Length: 490
Image (cartoon, rainbow, N blue to C red; front, side):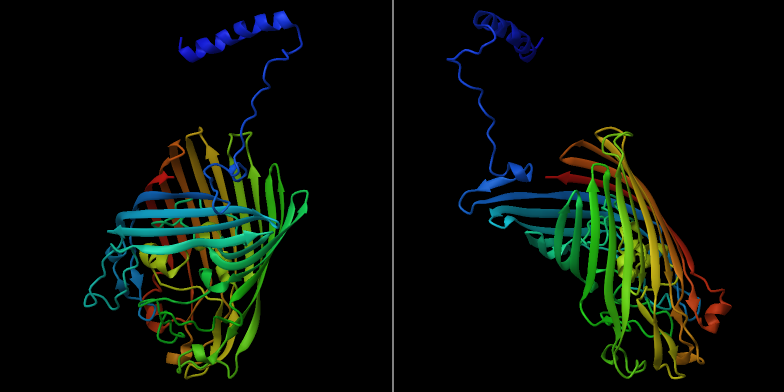
């Protein structure tokens, strides 16, 4: 028997004679029990240390990880001819990525309450992750390799200050509540960057709260068009150009978001609304495709619902999350929700292949015979996402998710051939599902494996005759991705 166990067993035998000698009353000359010391930073959780010179509590943490991925490639087709423009072998991904994140948090009490700040920066670098480009002489077009090279990509994920319910800076989107528990079908896919915002939260009591936020539209995937070489739908479509946005401009740089939430012992429910405006402006289009004579605004909106249900009756830590949203003209809010953010030029060129498209908030619905835009229309979209987390034991857990997104584009009319054909992206749907298994032998280490599957179905409006004659290939695609991840958390 160990010394500790012997001591514990001997303690009552030592105390009992003292009680018998003095009766039920405690001895007057015994000192009172020593109270446990409470540190000035204990209220903020473990890991915070006190800096007396500035009267501030500080916490430094982060993660260093290594991730390897296998993602088979698929052929990319030219929508004007229906011929292969990039071979599947040029899209295949087999490689290793190194990921790192460092977090700096501070807390300081003021007369207005706790003043909080946070800075979170990540860096990702990798080799062999689709790091080569097919020779242009072999294919009709040469799509730039969309992967990681040996140089690091550094991104500020979060940087904000918070006081008395007001948050200003770079923080997670208020519209979506699905956490990044899945690794995702891309290297570093669950390293989520925040959006620029100013937000205010008010607590009504009894678990009810409401948040109003102005968030940057450009931080939502799908709200801007910045596709590179090879992403053009065809010669008659309003052309894509790197860093050029068209029929997709906003009068303001922000989306107004409002939420109403109720937190309870069983989880939470939250309702969301968002408002913005799409505008079309002559200065953002090429001279060939002139828009309407003056900028015209189109109201855009979105509404969503999300919930979290705790399930400790199955296992401690188990939970189910659900989210659904619909939008008219703000595709980025839906495309960025949970796992349905994989309908992007970046991922399609690497995994799904087929016809590369970029979902847009607005498209030209009618053009003249020379291609001048005479009317535009807004797209709409909805999605449904569910995710379940199960703890097999305190050290082993799994996450499984499934998401579906449907994008509906306005009808595009043709007035002839060439520039007047008005080839545009049509309706599209995306199904995403995945499952992982994570082992955490302690709080500092995590080792996980994940398998993800995507299925994309698209359509093209007013396709070129050559594309039709070729059988309209590349409108359906599948991707199966496998990932192994090792993280050191500190």
